[in-house]
Image (cartoon, rainbow, N blue to C red):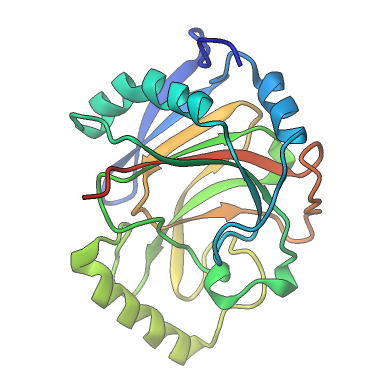
Length: 232
């Protein structure tokens, strides 16, 4: 990878979404060498990391991942009012591969990556618009768009109550409104587009019904997923 990993000519905007007006940074043409990243992804070794991600992952080289974090730090610090900006927790190449009929119930609903408001997610799409995008959701029963430690008990009780009333979600990737959740914001996948948002926003990959989900990084839904957080 080149010493500078971010494109100085990238187009940056910040959108404030939902009732809670949470910031989402959108950066188009974010990487100076996206094809170099795709080549690295094609040569990587993939496996399962954790029980919840519906696909395969491969760790990104730490020095390269740190360069992304460090070059984005001024923008992140200003947008999210964080000083210092959290350190790099982990970074992966990721490919969604699980067919809808094989999804666990927890994978059929929006999720948060953590309850801490200073934990951030950086998502970079390396594949194309046909792979869907990322959507953000509001829990209907509580109105929550973010879930922190103080909200978690009420959020979990509302989820269990909703399932008791409406049943488990169908075996499919969530894509739009459901009896339990309202989709209030969505961002399309685009090659070399980044999204940066707080990890405790309720969100989920937006994957169309019937979409092919090959495990090949050259043809699959390939992203870079990085997480920033300083564990106490």
